[in-house]
Image 1 (spheres, rainbow, N blue to C red):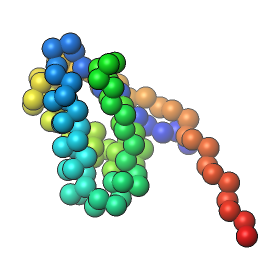
Image 2 (image 1 turned 180 degrees about the vertical axis):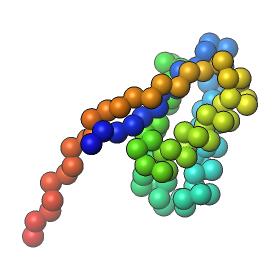
Image 3 (image 1 turned 60 degrees about the vertical axis):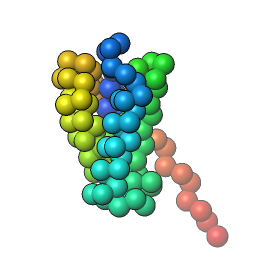
Length: 101
């Protein structure tokens, strides 16, 4: 099974602190929809100010909602042409070994 992740790349004129704040607002929005515990357990994202990128795992409904919210917030705040979104399929991480008594 493959994982779906989205990579956001921001143009040089986008303030990365504000982009990061928009990501955090998206996570809060996902908490409102799914609950704080579920977001803590299922959400996976990385933000790099130096690379001007953000990667969000959208393999499940929590990540998908974070992507939807983040894309909407970033489009409205910075403009549609201020960033790109790339969908990437990655091999799924190996499952942990079952614990045997």
